[in-house]
Length: 412
Image (cartoon, rainbow, N blue to C red; front, side):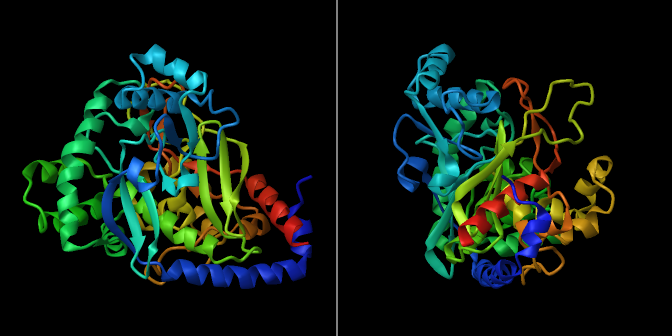
């Protein structure tokens, strides 16, 4: 049975212990200094074996029957890896379990929307300058054009993947001969330029482009970055995952800080710092937002992607008050009083980002009765339509009540 919010509030000793646990966990988050250190194939980065693919969100109930957008991306990866002759063959491999779909976060990887990671996939490696053994990975962007993260079957995506894993990865590898790149500084540059660091990363990408230009002399890569304003997104996903994982590693079993907010196209899930290996899930709804083509009537897929980690860390939807362009785009979809109400369910600010709320706190969600927001794009539910537009997702408060019930049950 799910505990009520009132029941949780009345457990004062546990609440007091949670406050202490959260203070310790939050101090670990604030100590992380994320740096982009390298680009590495998933096979080498996380030991990803052949015939294994990584997807966003909690594990599927039946990985042989993934959501349609994830299935489309998985089919493309089967073709890319040479495991399948054609789409039909790839579908059979997935349906028969010969190609396994596993949760990316179990490997320390966060992947955007319906993007699937295969052994050849190049990942960005983000490490902590204060603890080089701590690291997180996400997908390396492939430039403008068709994208694996959109969950379609556009065969041109295979060309982008090949370019990413050969040309782009090789060129970027040379950039790190000069040392890693400080992601907090790039994020701050983006915020100063009006980014929310989720729906918009234009300023952060421009700052990254300038830094890479000082390290590389490659006109094609520079032109790609100029055409790809969301290139910084996956770097920031990995940075936020790294920061929140520090809360999990703090070992505070009563901590109610949220370290993951993600969807697999069927279910939405969260993980708490106090029980970081356990997903608490619910049926996912689709994000809502402005469409690229207002005449496009394709249904949007239920929440898909790991990028809610950005919003859980206090950016994305939490930064819209300082990001005029995405805030205006979402204006019709934002709930009344969102500026004040969202801040109440997050901790105090990160020292480097004093204007913004801090980490999402499940206990505050329950106590305040406020549904958390995340700025996650909309993709077609049919696994064919691809990107539909920007999206705003409202996480169900009962998900957080359930998570607290599980946490308090263990602590009792």
